[in-house]
Amino acid sequence: MVAGPKISHIQLLPEATTPRGEVCSVLCRIPRVLAALRAELLVRADGGESAAYPLRWVGLWRNCDVYEGRISAGTTGLFWLCCRVHGADGTVYVGRGGRPSARDDADPEQWTVYDAGYHTPAWFAQGVCYQIFVDRFHRPGAFLPKEDGRPRLLHADWNEDPVVNERPTDMLNNDFFGGNLAGIRRKLPYLKGLGVGTLYLTPIFDAASNHKYDTGDYHSVDAMFGDEEELRRLCADAAGQGMRVILDAVFSHTGIDSVYFNAYGRYPSLGAAQSKDSPYFDWYTFTHWPDQYHCWWDVYTLPTVNKTDAGYLDFISNAQNSVVRRWLRAGVAGFRLDVADELPQEFIEPLRRAVKQTDADALLLGEVWEDASNKVSYAKRRQYFWGSELDGVMNYPARDALIAFVKGEMPACQCRDTLAQLYAHYPRPTWRAMLNLLGSHDTARILNVLGCQDAFFTLGRMEKYAYRMSDAEVRRGKERLKMAAMALYMLPGSPCVYYGDEAGLQGSQDPMNRRTYPWGRQDGELLAWYRQLGALKTRQKALHDGDFTLLADGPDVLVVRRIGEQAVTAVLNRRRQPYFYRADALGEVLVGSARAQDGGLLVAGHSAAAFTEG
Image (cartoon, rainbow, N blue to C red; front, side, top):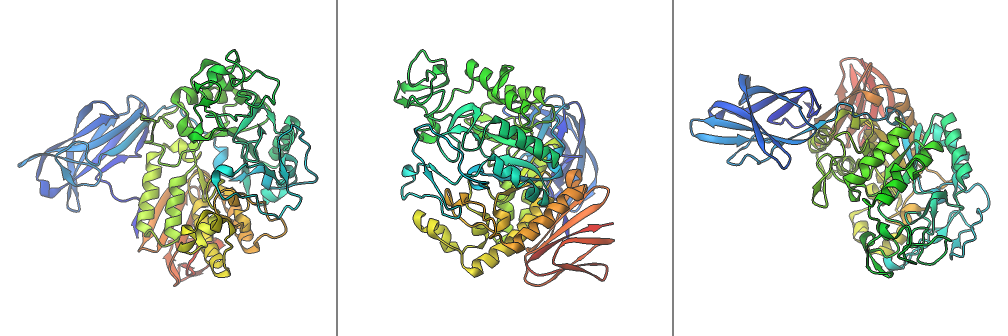
């Protein structure tokens, strides 16, 4: 087996991220064919100048000379490293991959220096995160009344499909099933049985749509979901079960039908679309008042907000009665920032200060779909993990790698390298605040992604909506999902379950990925698997804050190890044949199709197993 990530020719010790003020050791492996006479480490600040540090020869490694040096983490930021090699034939540069280049910016190694006071909540990594699309999770009785003149379709039958329209522009998102906060509160025992420690709710504030990403009033819980008192009861009852509640915070835009824009005059306030004297007028950018304005991704119902407007910053964060402070005081434990890469540093930094001043242990997550450590958005390098912005992000890159591996589209070594490099780029405090997911309200249902034939992904929009998986596709999807979910629960951070994935819900993109939870019709096999994984996550302390190692054996076996007081190991066997994993001291098999044999573990074909070692 090959341990750890792909060997880099520039290795930072102990890790590739360093708290400011500490010294980092660096090993540089320089191919012997370059006949190095001496070498230097070049450290280039992101977008800045390079500084050279001397390196000393310390030995040999395979076909490389090994040089060692030390660099001081004097200031926070992102840095790029390469070796400058002086040889008999001139000067060349060696970066991460070990190939010589005439350029000093060819394949550099990334080094992140973060603030020594950077702290993230420990509680998030100690349990499972469960994402709930509130209208579709549980309806405990009749619809809650909401008489505001907006047209709505109310589904009497909980098991109906959502309304779909052939053209995306015709999607009104105004059909409702009646799920609410009281319904979530009634299902807390069920969630506890899944090992849930965090409830992540899609937006709950007053809005016209069923998804609520078109905020109408940040200071009011939508009447169809309940009211502020019901939210407080949910937070209190969840706390009694050892759970916390975090909210989806949509701060990049509001709804056109809102207190602030008020294009339809439904609110008693003077909105920006009604008068230039509105207190909210400076929140928006009009190209022709009142009917032409900047809006989110050209969706006219979602006017974007000027995130650096002083009044808006006070409203969301800075004022003592600001939006984030108010809901934290009501019992909420943190926020997930919708489209975080569309929120500038000047917005996120004061928001973090307000959150941490109100509750030092509150969580601040961001929606970022790429490697967030080096993300460039709107031509600016983002500083999410330097210590003054986010705690963690949604881990879509890990999702992509795990899906590709279990589907046979990526060999184990590449999956290993992708995951290892991703976590190497993130500071240790960020590890425990990662939201690790396989599905969300923005993706097709994971069972479809893993089980459907390739032809499914080429279907037209309406054909996808009508598609129902065959029995063979469901079986294939479940096999792959069990493997991917086990890996997900082993990664540093919190595994996130999108409501219903554990029950076998199917569906393509929005709105079919937002079907109602199938109470009484759950897939028993998947549900049992997720309950076992939940117990694994909550009881094994190594999965809370243990070290992290990845191994690969051939193209089809991926091994994930977490090492704390006790080592916990998961083996994902993509082959059809059983796989034998030799352990020095095999402990208890915790989850999966495997049995102890001859001092090791025999893992069944196309399955996964987790066990203790030592």
